[in-house]
Amino acid sequence: MPKDHKLFDQIQQAGRAFMEARQDTRPTGEETPEAPQPEDMFFVLVQEAGRRIMDLKMEKLAELGLPELSVNMFQYVNVIGSLESPNATQIAAALGLTKPSVTAILQKLERNGLVARERDAADRRAVRIVLTGKGRQVMDAYLDAHRAFADDIQERLEPDAYARLVELLARGMGHV
Image (cartoon, rainbow, N blue to C red; front, side, top):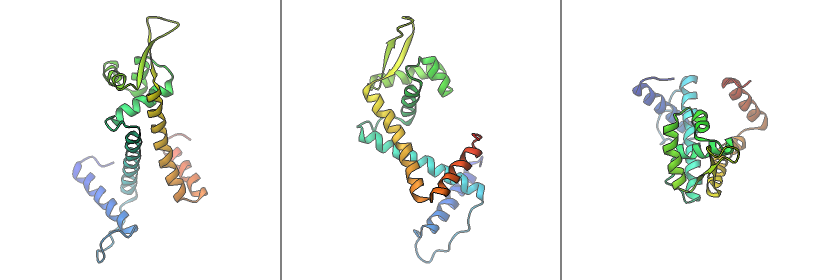
């Protein structure tokens, strides 16, 4: 992965130019650029995938009337929903953050009506974080954005190619 910003910018520009040329969106008369190296193209494609998912998330938030919600807060809601009534320590561990930094975001989520604090029925000293109805809508939007991205890729590929892509990504990520 590129380490300095100039190299990063050059790889991005080369990747974009190559992608535009493949999609015939470059002005006529311009020379088709040389294909970037596979590792550079992979970098550009992963970055583009992240950008597309981010755009889908922001669209979903706007549909819910929550365009001011940050992507980090979006991720917190997803983690809270997937852990089912965690405490702040569990949320911090899941996100790899400190409890104080998590507490600050939880306060914002609570002010936005996305989470509520509830006393643990088994241990009245403990406080659990639960999603509100609005918070569940945000979690659904988070998941919908990821599904929409996957569906878009799946529609562009033959079924065997999509299955192979998933298999290769899983292997490359160390999940196989």
